[in-house]
Length: 383
Ligand SMILES: Cc1cc2nc3c(=O)[nH]c(=O)nc-3n(C[C@H](O)[C@H](O)[C@H](O)COP(=O)(O)OP(=O)(O)OC[C@H]3O[C@@H](n4cnc5c(N)ncnc54)[C@H](O)[C@@H]3O)c2cc1C
Image (cartoon, rainbow, N blue to C red; front, side, top):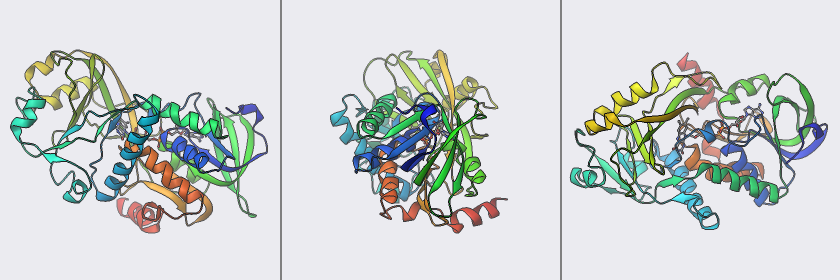
């Protein structure tokens, strides 16, 4: 760990802005490929304090477009491999997704090992789905549940043992693009963001600061447009659910999902409300909204589950809802790892791998890169 007060005039090959899953996975991947002069700047005092610590921990490979699905499949594979060195990182629960081609196209399913289930088979897993009207259901045996704090811990360990540096409580301010090449980054006090602590110099910069990326980059004259939306999660008691391990279940059609925790259940009613970065509230009561949503498919006794706790987290999307990864043609040495939407846990390791490749000079993220078509035209057509 690097002391914040020691950050003045130091030079690094790479500075990563943001210590969530995207930033830490990129930094750890760089370290493992022999690049050790790295500094991660993180505003908070712990890793993953925002979206990366406020999610459901589902590893879901089938996504809304085939390109994202490809990255989810790679990400899930890397998680399962890491699990071999990091016990209990991943639970092979499998998943049950109730969906149709409007949510997940055939070109996505073609990349994911799966089997279609009959309505009877679905109810064998979930007898509570009494009022479910039926429809397409997909069983994905290689999906599962990840212990996110463990993943963050394992990335931190890889980074620090590989010689990389992380400064907590250190907010990156304006990034000055130097005429001679490289960047000068102002570092501010993490909590107040008002006090300038110092500055760091680097040859390349990776922007991985989630919901804050659009505002941050605009101040550095590298504008992008991102939409930030709020979504809630809710923990209930397990009612009559029993201890038998079940796959997590997601109804794309009704808009809710559920996974088992130890002795409780984690639900989301899939809210998607626009918000400003860091502003965590919803216009509806989270519990009422969830009860209303699950009513359409769940056993009425689900209505009596007791809500134990809840939280709201932020998902950040590019206008076309695809990630923004890799180098930016507008500025040499400027890289993105943002817009991970609702797939950032599943894809974290694959994102880290790709963005690190770009920093090391390989152009493996061309399909995910910034382009006028993706950002300038789409934001004009939205306005
Ligand atoms: C309710 C909910 C449920 C979800 N469930 C799942 C799921 O089941 N499976 C899945 O795959 N995905 C899920 N996601 C999505 C996933 O959580 C995100 O895609 C992922 O965490 C994004 O990671 P990130 O590193 O980009 O952002 P963050 O984790 O938000 O990290 C950005 C970091 O940058 C820091 N920062 C900001 N500005 C600065 C600055 N100027 N200087 C220094 N640091 C800065 C912040 O403090 C923050 O720590 C869910 C999201 C939500 C909200």
